[in-house]
Length: 98
Image 1 (cartoon, rainbow, N blue to C red):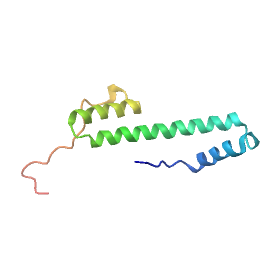
Image 2 (cartoon, helix red, strand yellow):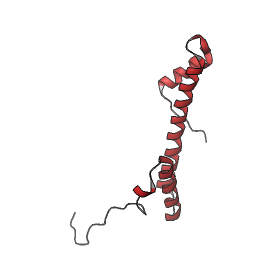
Image 3 (spheres, one colour):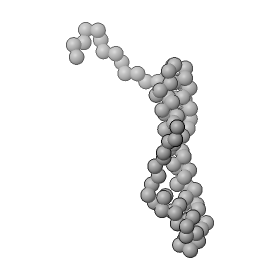
Image 4 (tube, rainbow, N blue to C red):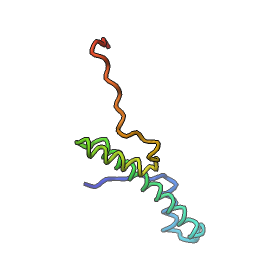
């Protein structure tokens, strides 16, 4: 299954300038570094989204917890700032009339 990825307009223009105009428009090394940084940022967002989706859609609790930890590791959340398990909202009392 083919999936599409959207990129910012500025990145698209930089890619076109780099491949079609080369060093005629801006310094090639400077433009290449801008493109590299933008693509790394985009790749980081794609990976984070995939990990988050796996966390939310995992069928078993063990898989979900492993995916949650992988997502938090990827995002750079320190282990000291994490809870031991996924947060669940408390259930309303049995006599609650909501």
